[in-house]
Amino acid sequence: MQPSPAPLPPEPLLPESARRFAAWCVVLLLAAGVAAVFVWLCVVFKTAVTPVLLAILGAALLGPLHRRLLRMKVRRGLAAMLTVVAVLVVVGGATYIVVAALIETGDQIVASLRQAASDIADHLGAAGTSLDDLAGNAEKLLKEFGGTAASGVISGLSVVGQMLATGVLALFLIFFFLKDSDRAAGTLRSLAPRGTGDLVEAMARRAFEAVEGFMRGTTFIALVDAVLIGIGLVVLDVPGAVGLAALVFVTAYIPYLGAFLSGAIAVLVALADRGFVIALWVLGVVLAVQVVEGHLLQPLVQSRTVQMHPAVVMLAITAGASVAGVLGMLLAVPLTAAGTGVLGVLRTRYGTPSEAAD
Image (cartoon, rainbow, N blue to C red; front, side, top):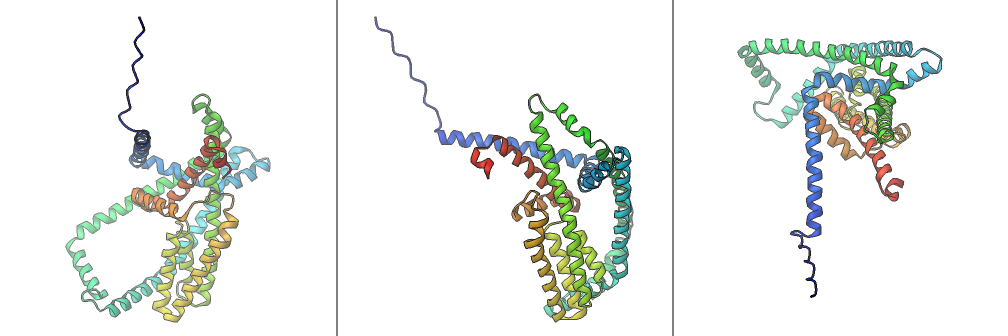
């Protein structure tokens, strides 16, 4: 008696392409869910997360100074303390210069912007859009909602207190990050799952190198932009040149968008105070500095850091602004640079030979 033939395996319900698509959808949904939970936790615990992120940026910016002190045979604790003191002196002095410049020339800048807005409103000729109408409406609103204004002042004082507390905590964390930086690799290896210590350490080092390069390069480029644009504004006799240059330096930490905002304000001030021709000259100075930055400074200064496409930078800034406002805009690009560095390590480790070479 012949044995019965073995039953054929059942045919799959979906073709191979549909199953691949479904698998990728599951992977993307899981990744998006993990990312959403991580962002939600950061927002919930932002009081603790913000000083840590600021401290990481500060440690990345001050790492070269700390390492130089260590090479001079200075003890780690003393080197970290001297670095933090240097930060306080430099940042305090820079803040004093910027605030003094903005206070000294702030009235001129605001008056010029008001004049520019008035001229634009006169040319448009729209009813109810003049500054007098806006001022009258604002006065009514203030009379009507005086209590709200008072509560707003109290809220503003509370925000200032939170900012000061965050800054102090970030300084303490910078000190400990620099002092115990030699233990970071061992700590990561002890926390990593077995067999992944080398990979975790490589990703952490590459992420920190990307953030370090971004912070140093951006600070140098911001200083050069502020000096060049400030010289141009002084030569063109634009009011508030020092304050506008300080604004250029501060906004340079927000790539693309910061340069656009500070340049637009400088052009409007020149238009209101010095006329159309000088405004065109200011626009030319701003554009020339941006061309020098994009074609000379960026390739030279940030050639060793993670290079990101402008579209990725703009999307990161938009996402950061939607999550944490101005602070999110400032932190978005260095965090994206760190993530890009981690992806580069993973691609080198697990990618195909051609991808690793690219």
